[in-house]
Amino acid sequence: MSKRLYVGGLSFDTVTEGLKTFFEQAGVVESATIISDRDSGRSKGFAFVEMSSDAESQRAIADLNGQVLDGRTITVEAARPERDNARSSGRGRW
Image 1 (cartoon, rainbow, N blue to C red):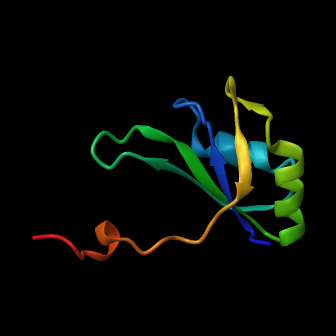
Image 2 (cartoon, rainbow, N blue to C red):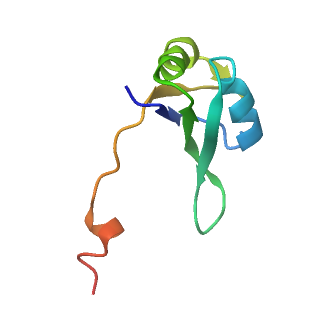
């Protein structure tokens, strides 16, 4: 089990501090990062939250998945490892 969680379906109005506070219901939050568009700075509607233990991560998934945050029903699941693709590695560019 991963301590890092993927959080989807976020409102564009959700801020990092509010996300962190929401996840503290399940335990100690080590980090909360809302992913934003690099050009506009606007939220992309998803985030990554890292809990301090696997047990707290499991609790967050069980307790917070499907709950409403800032008017939106969110999805909480274990984050998958990053993929190595052509865009991130620089391959395939001219």
